[in-house]
Image (cartoon, rainbow over the protein chains, first blue to last red):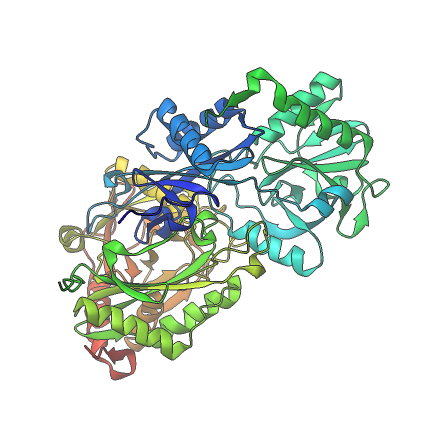
Amino acid sequence: MTHPSPDFSAGAAYVRGEYLPIAQASIPLTDWGFLRSDATYDVVTVWDGAFFRLDAHLDRFLNSCRRFRLDPGKTRDEITRILERCVSLAGLKRSYVEMIVTRGQPPWGSRDPRQAVNQFHAFAVPFVWIANEEQRERGLHLLVSDVQRISAASVDPTAKNYHWNDLTMGLLGALDAGADSVVLTDAQRNVVEGPGFNVFALSQGVLVTPRDGVLEGISRRTVIEIAQSLGIPVELRALPAAELRSAQEAFLSSSGGGVLPVTRVDGKPVGEGVPGPVTRRLLETYWAWHGRPAYSTPVRY
Amino acid sequence: MTHPSPDFSAGAAYVRGEYLPIAQASIPLTDWGFLRSDATYDVVTVWDGAFFRLDAHLDRFLNSCRRFRLDPGKTRDEITRILERCVSLAGLKRSYVEMIVTRGQPPWGSRDPRQAVNQFHAFAVPFVWIANEEQRERGLHLLVSDVQRISAASVDPTAKNYHWNDLTMGLLGALDAGADSVVLTDAQRNVVEGPGFNVFALSQGVLVTPRDGVLEGISRRTVIEIAQSLGIPVELRALPAAELRSAQEAFLSSSGGGVLPVTRVDGKPVGEGVPGPVTRRLLETYWAWHGRPAYSTPVRY
């Protein structure tokens, strides 16, 4: 009797040293990665058979690990090979690829995180868009939430983490109100970030994106580089919610879709209420840059 | 050939409708309870064969569920029976019993939390003390951290959640400095809470515990009730870090040990540097109250 070979078509995961179909992948209920959200992660995408800016994602992941004192227990090359194997097992040309370290669990009775054996996990699934096709076409309708993003005085936003309750509660409020997604603010009512994305506003001809209290997105960085290469002035500074509402154009940046036009904020049109010309130019260039050899690491299937 | 019966001696869990030994219990890697820490929980203890204040814990758990819009999919009675079965399978007379709801996962491609099927999980393990015997005897050495507790403007602290990165990073700093545990502050440098406990200070004859920005602990409530019954004045108000440092006595309250004396704060002795008389009286009464029929639900083993 032979075992049927596992079906990786919905995605492949690496957990506890094994490759498994995504639906079979799990973490122990008692891992502090779950019971204390004591974990860090990063997401890199594969587009048309190549990782996009893998080096930048690995740099940030290893920085996040250091910040939270989590040890992946793998070298950079080992991590790369595991991610590649997940993608190739699933046979995905376009994929959303996540790498994770959890605290694990200290010996029974100990509450000292330093005594835990940290655990590395990874998975590759079909590419995830943070907005559907219709939303990408017409532009997203965004709500500015009253929920404040967790402050940098509490959790370092530059180290990627799963502390999303504020984003989730804000998102639920936005969806209830008929919007597509949400952006949170800080205590001064400056816009910071939303669930899985950074925010940009074109304001008096200048592209503005929040400087503080945000994840330093790789897509955000790519957009900034593109704008600079196109001669569009960029400012990293506080972005008051009122300035976003009265922007000429607005968009989100995310690994889950690149440049995503925003055409309504709090129910009112942004500019003409359609994706603007600067947004469209950045969007096209974002995808064109996926062909740049320096940013592209072909997957060996 | 017969299967050996499962060994529940290290603890028993209820996951996906099944009872499993704790070491085999897991949650799917893709459950948003993990990937977004989109979950709530509560912990009730069993002491000498009976749940302590089970009703209060169930009330708080169901409130937390409502607050985060998570549906346990079980009635209060069903939850009680599952918790009881976990404890009795593990044969534990003294147990730490956790009930959890996770968001689950929405259909593939959706990012709408409302479309997810929430999941109920539970487990019972041997009683967990948040301080070891030596620490409980001599009193805990506590550090007041510079890390700020996540603000109530971001995450509702009265709905129990796994957003512990601030507590974990603060704890790591305290352990590195040679302390036993940590207490975090708010933006005004008022003491709020630590990893798994509330804080009390006896200040000019009055028992003070922070009113805002904290989990409303059931042990905290029990201590307040005991103090009132003993005629000790209690104030729920802001507790400046400086006032904790100069307190006559200090202690923690937690399901993981009841009343835990604190004898040093930031390296300096509290009062005489030994567990004080008011603390000792509250501690003794805390355990004596475990015999109260109104607070006690015997486990049917």
